Image 1 (cartoon, one colour):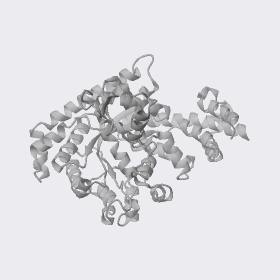
Image 2 (image 1 turned 30 degrees about the horizontal axis):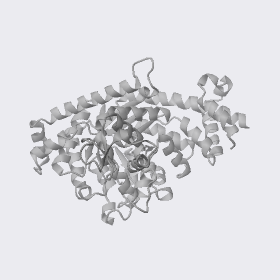
Image 3 (image 1 turned 90 degrees about the horizontal axis):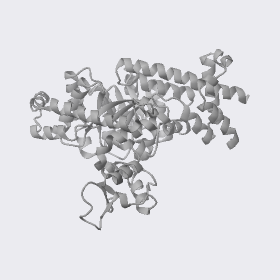
Image 4 (image 1 turned 180 degrees about the horizontal axis):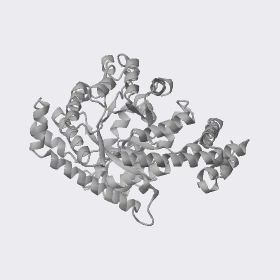
Length: 482
């Protein structure tokens, strides 16, 4: 499609609903939806027109996003320069100590021009940009990035602002962001108790030693993060950024690669926070699922969650499960992770679930997930770059065929150099999905959000209004093209 043909497309998609003819509105929602579906098929092979269409398409919520990994490398480097932090050149990492020591290896971040080769190499090291699979696996490149920029944690509020701004531009209304706000306090308390091997004793001892105070202080950290977000975006002022309109909730993330006493303490902290603070809606286990400790203790972690769900049944759980593929672990390690997350831990949502067809009795498991409405958070970009799974190898089609609820999510859009629009683009180009399928996944994201019922209902009503306006504009273009 020539560039001149794209101008009216962009103008119409960006126009408000006031420009929509009343005659077109009178045609009814099914007709407008059908016209929008036809339009997508017409531009499916035109990357520019398809990109405009998907940018403007309402997308509901992003339920699987790690906040630190959602921030782009350039932002971390800018904040490091503003905060007088240093870069360890050989490690390609931001550090907090004085640049006066180790002068050969340390450089002030502010002294690194953004036009320099060093700056470019830092962006590459903090992300999947220019990643070379001949030198390092996507898995290792991806997970190595976090240790390079985590020292900029005092800018979490700025990162939240960035993520909400990007969500607003991509027509995303709701976020659930993974974050560990207690800054290691739960893990330290877990170590003070040690591993007792008895879940009830662990629970009681941690509470006796002050884990509730840890949860309260973690909530205060969220207060500070959100206050900084509001300042950066101007929320509550006449010049408020569109990102202020994005609803953000939190998922307490647990580091599954740590000793069991730390994991137990963190899981319990997640339950405590979700019970007392409506902003914290769930908990999840993070770090590589194929790690030695993650694999060794996987079933233990599921049993811990099962026990604590019995103590805090009102707290819903979402879990990374099945973020594995052939050759990453022994074959027997591919046979049970999704199943135990669903049946033992009682997860209401699963993140990734890529190896589900390699599990024992996979079709039975899919039928169970469909029957119990266990939703899968689909992360196409990260599944590609980390696991090398794409196209027909990806289980998205199997989930949909079995009737399992699915929704697209970004995972780590900063590290992966992606956003929600590009996830939808992959769904169209790599998975062959049509407009009704995309629309259903956007709706599913809000149906299965863990936000309070009133918030969820409000977001769902807004999504339907957004769809009505979007489809009216696209239908007008489709009618004009005939």
